[in-house]
Image 1: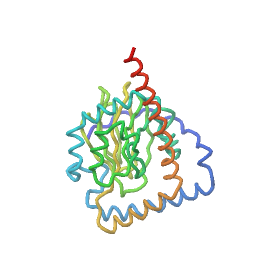
Image 2: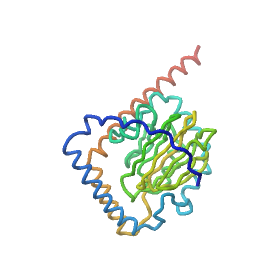
Image 3: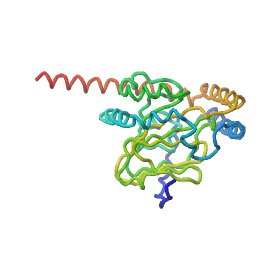
Image 4: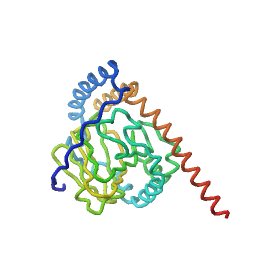
Length: 276
């Protein structure tokens, strides 16, 4: 674990989008949080891996392929970044993230989004998609692109039944300035290296460097006993009926189409130049 360094000042809280202010949505979110906290206590007891902020890679053999082939994944991420202006901010995909993602400071290129493979985006990163396809029970996978100087405020994930993997791809030279806190523990990213977090713990991220940080994030099911798996399945099934799930699902499809069109135009322009 890396030593903690001085925290940067936190930005002012952004205003809530009007679409998130409805009374029904507020009630669903309030009671949903209570439910997930209660469920989390049960899932922790059912867990087959440690209930700690960071969970050791030795519990997840499938992660070795990501480290072994990280340079191929990095190459595909660099190709995607050529169309950076067409990659949406996280809050554009999921409006509920308005508090932690502002403007273009945290961009997300989804390969798997909320349980669904994003076919067109996967064609832009076929090797990465192939490797992800062999991993068990992936819910979400995306290139996470963090702007220089940006701080993602403290927040928690939706359920303890899902763990999140980070694979370092493009890391600032001063990597000690780029870090994540999960619970009371800190970690710095390193290119080609994986770590796993339980993002139901309170966590936040800083990129205090003057360079962009790019990692591959994967969300997958926490190994649990039968009771825990059943409860997690029921919880996720309920979440899929809410706007929290349905809105991002639709938005990912919209941005997928826009990115494909931009990439196609760029390729057509290159072909025209090669014919000159």
